[in-house]
Length: 349
Image (cartoon, rainbow, N blue to C red; front, side, top):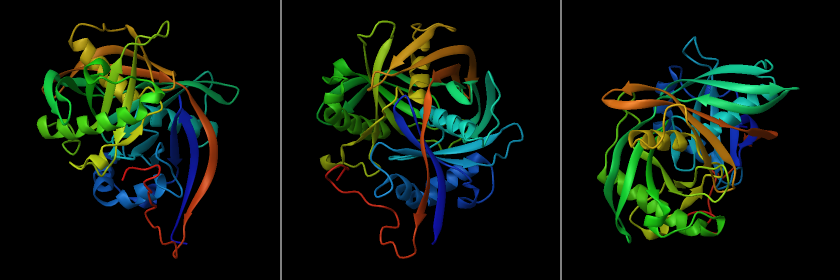
């Protein structure tokens, strides 16, 4: 056997996350930011092995759980998505904290356990409400979020000019309104959402460059959030987040990917930053954000700050996670599919 991976599977408001524990041996030593940069250059084969068939499926994300370099942190994480590695993910953080606490890898303290996480973009503090050995919900004190471009025109292939926002909430997102795109936000709209979302990602990375002032290796718009109103009482807005294929190109066959099953924590953080910049969301005001499965994250801005040249906000995200199983995944020396595989019946071409 060449590789064995111990994992705890979980989901956060519907979004599946495979938590890979004891992952230090997979990367050289260093800070999580340095290990993230290494993963982006060297570990795409591992990423595909874990989340592609026969071990994975199109909606799956994963997390490498690492020993932190910062003494203030309890754990470090790097997130694996279908489109690449990301510095931070709300749903995957919820999956990770829930999994580590409920399996005893981190000590649970009732009624609230505080966990500090080292990410490639800074420290994140998490408060988990716990009772009777179970995590009831998780509140993430996310890294600062900020808008980069507001109401800028984006020339999207096949759609023409569409107004969009670009913001950072742990990763970079482009935001567009479903009405402007002529698409709904229901599960039956999934194929259209994937196609349009992939075109938005392709276009925005060509037209509007981004680079995080504190970590220049974070330099692409990774997520596409399509937003609209919700008909659910007590919910402020609805969204779907498109994770486009990592083989995105001008070929229309690549204009697809997968949809975030959750309301997307980093996307909600970035969206709240854009709303606040317009005067549409006050500090301390709850923002209930609904995803594709009608589940919700509750966001809140708890302060203001700056990140390099950007006026930024301090977001929190609250959501629930559930452990779904534990596994040991094996790569045998003789396995011909060392990076997994995808087939066009359910995967992008």
